[in-house]
Image (cartoon, rainbow, N blue to C red; front, side, top):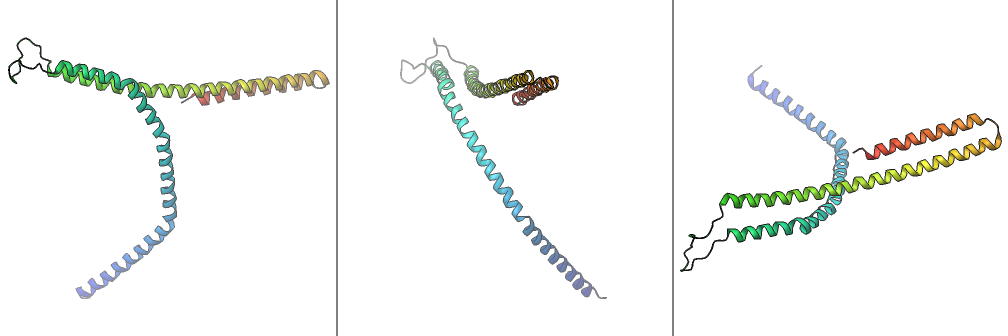
Length: 199
């Protein structure tokens, strides 16, 4: 078989294979297209929710930094600026440094670094305080729920005890049942509390 025929035959096979692959790709695209759209929509919703959750907390942190950290940093920077500013010469525009002290550049840089570190520390402390308050609120809610569950179980045990004392029939079984119910309820409440408190 001549080479040109082989090349033509190979070219036709390649084109046929490409056509089959393109058809398969179209089918897979049609098949998985809705899943991709759904995943994109879910991701957009989650991103929207995350932004809605984050924005108020950033606003609160910014207000707290503005109220607490910013005045201190501003005072420190103005004090440093007053210390760094050169004294003006008595004659013309020449600077006189004979009697005055000069602030070393490393000291100025160190002061700016300390001010930045204080600002970062303040932000971190504010975030930690907010998180601690949230944990305390969750812990208080869990304690209230445990207290309510305990009261309910105590009331059930008391009513069961009264039933046992009133009927006289099968008192041991009913008392044991009430005791078991109280114990299982207390264990359930304790495990609920542990589940809420654990981060």
